Amino acid sequence: MAVADPPGGLIAVVAAVILDDLVVPTRLLSAQRTEPPELAGGWEIPGGKVDPGESPRAALHREIREELGVRIRIGASVLGPVDGWWPLGERYAMRVWLAQVTHGIPQPLEDHADVRWLGPRQVWSLDWLPANRPVIEAVLATVWNSPPGN
Image 1: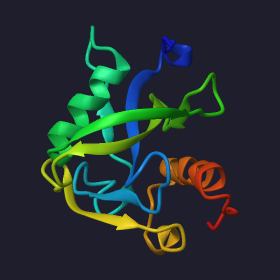
Image 2: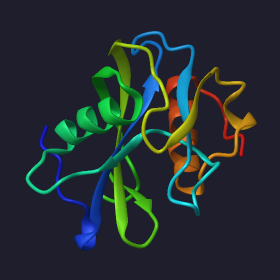
Image 3: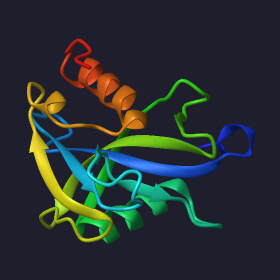
Image 4: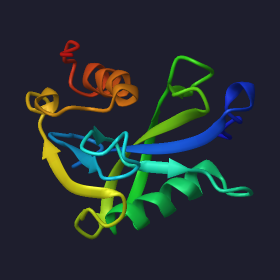
């Protein structure tokens, strides 16, 4: 399925909710930001900007490889409220997919200080970046039938 451009000329960003298993998930991966300074220390789902001429899925594979040093299999979309996109500040819109690591062990290589695997009851123990909170709530509701926690 083709992914439309983000609405309103916003800059496209992609991210992966990396699960330990796409069929029977028990944990999801969180990554702690180091850059930019206003986001440093906050926790997020990993990803980044789509380069000109790059497809969103190719960008997701590249970003996860650069940031965490792993390869992933992309699963279902986590559709956002604006034509499938999630608002990400005033200039960006984020497309999100579920994913599973297929090769490697996630490490905080680029723009991250730490990574942690979290079960559904541990998810809200971290200080998630505000733009990621609704995505996490949607994943908890659809993957684990958990009510919003934060």
